[in-house]
Image (cartoon, rainbow, N blue to C red):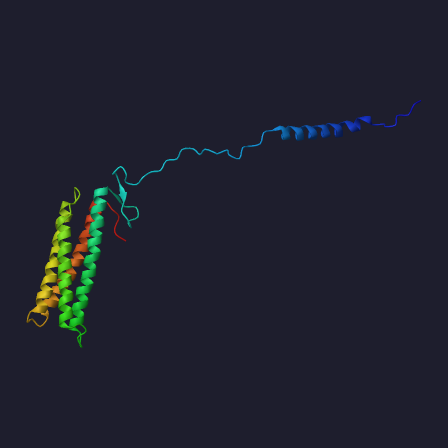
Length: 204
């Protein structure tokens, strides 16, 4: 009887099948077209929302979470600017009065007079600017209170200068300086009242 040289001839079938699959995959991948380097991916449409473009609401700078319409935002921004300048004038007038009253005197008469004149001029200019503001609807009463407060500040500054230039020993000048400080504080409070009436967040 003839002897089969390979008792398990089927064991070579699986490796041949695997080898054929590898060869097929290799030639198939090689035949695919390469991606063009100039291919550009097109992104989907995007939408950018513009703040205040439609005149609806605007976030007031420095006021987290506070939104008002554009007219009120402009109005409040002007009040903030004027309020800051008025506070600086109050510091200047206080410094002049304190220096002039110091022993020994830290500010001489000529310097005190010129510096007070500058305060008077600047305070009146700010009062005129407030009077020229056109308040948004609903803030007319606030505008009236603001004009009154800064008007008192301008008058107090002028009285302080008059007291300096008079024969008064200093009582009128010091009283006018205190009145200017009070008017400045009142104006600051009225700015916050206007901000609340407009619906903006409190000043930080």
